[in-house]
Length: 95
Image (cartoon, rainbow, N blue to C red; front, side, top):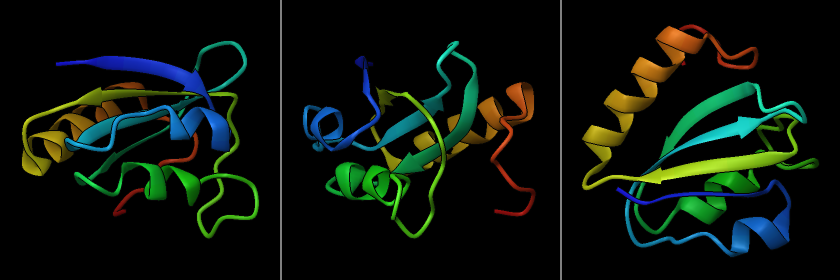
């Protein structure tokens, strides 16, 4: 499926596709994974906006990388596997 990396700000987020579910990684300046999550089709931009400064679920980062998948179940499973392997600093257990 399609992957895309943009700056983690409003302008960058607005360049992302919103037509399929995604797994996203919020990356540090050095490219490390700070947070991994999933977002439903039609809610990608809104969910990532919640992680920006001033959002209800702020996560620090400089870039965001998304991977589009066919359905939200597949996206959630992949996000779970990524969290298990990479243990991002801002992912909390049970979330």
